[in-house]
Length: 614
Ligand code: M6R
Image (cartoon, rainbow, N blue to C red; front, side):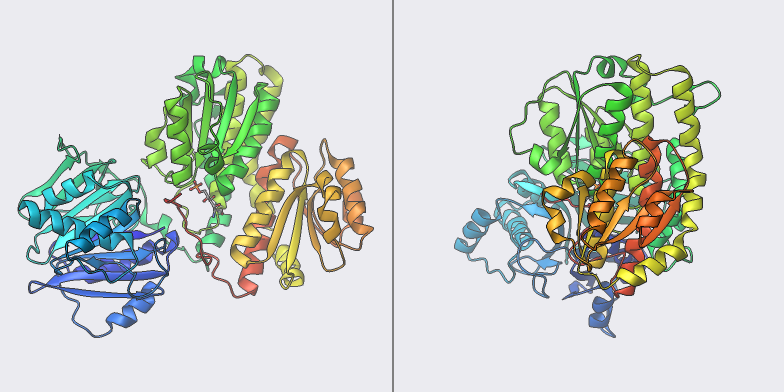
């Protein structure tokens, strides 16, 4: 969702802003803009479309200046068009502002400002905010820093903002609440501001993550000053970034998604490294070990998440119930937060989020926290809002995921949740000895098995060629492979725009079977395991109605292969680990179908990488 970049220093701001906006493109957006200060005036350019369209708009116009801000907008208030694109000017044109988030009380503020003579050009809540700041500055005589503070104390909603005043090319103001913002600190009072660290790391590794309700004044002569909305002074905590530049580049692949699919043997290894010791038969999860009583005495586990992370949560439900023998409920965070759920202080809530910024998941955490539950986060982005809002947790260490469609984040989440389930089982005294050891050995072998599965790429591509023009697809699985069916369907629909549904295989006969005909591809995960024979029967039901069967089978399988139009073999492993390897051919399939249909796989239409609005 919206991307923010700001720069203040000796370099030319425009180049840094454009490069930074391109790094943030993965977040999803529909318009873009920049503003610099030159000779006491703003040079402001914005348009509907991509950053490349913005570059064309700027063309040969003078875009010089050592201070500036850039923005990619994901439309909320008003359609994506040139006028609604950010930056937005204040009423007298002296201030300019970019914003990520939603100002919920913008309507009454706007009405009041109109009464006071303000004129608005756009449909956005953002334009109201910059007018409001100007109004406070003019009414109270406060400087910009103070005017922003007063304005934000009256604003309801979520925001990350950058503001500048055309009469002061030495100063940027940045603030956040519920939307991420990071400040890069260069030498000699050079500053970078961004929604995440990706636009910053090639210039400096020193960063400050702004906390909720903090406002930063970045000044070429005075340096950095941070206050809270309630006017408390904060000492900036500068930390060193560990992220590498290569991690956010394509590294020779055609897309980030393809690169991230292929990174999975390594990313899973990074997720489990140091957390289990096959030799000593021990699992070490500090977020569990340090709060062992909460896990031992938990009456129930609630899992809250959205999208792909919710699918990882479903896998975790099966794992925790099987290994740790504890009841688990998996909830869409967006439903959970609004349905007055029963939450008990003895509950443990697991919040799963790649970005760590998903607004619905964050709100579900706050709700559960208020009721006294213990919250454990499973996040990929270090220092993210969810990582900070939880009582304890485990990072997935998958490295930056840039493709909007989650791939390596999903397998990293499932890997961490696998170890979590083993660890909780050990703490509750229901798993030990030979079984624990065997499962750890199996988990350890998964990266190599995924490397094997990646070799099916050409075979998967040939299948994609056959089904790329389908209008619908059905994905079936049972037990541990049911969440994989859901995830396979989500991958296909989000990047290729083919309608796809995931279903528990046995549930098909209660409705979706009516859709089956010779034009319907049915992707079935039919690996050897507890439900194998049952899934074979479900396949027969599809065949009887002339549906096409594309199966994921265990190597050496004969029965399902014979029934299938196409089959992809994956290595043998324990039932509980099948999701980790069975999902990989489905990721590849979606990728190839989308490419063949001419879709932008990294930035599918309408989607945002981190969904910071509810
Ligand atoms: O960052 P999160 O894991 O909280 O994001 C949740 C969903 O928005 C995300 O998984 C989404 O469904 C992906 N586009 C799926 O590929």
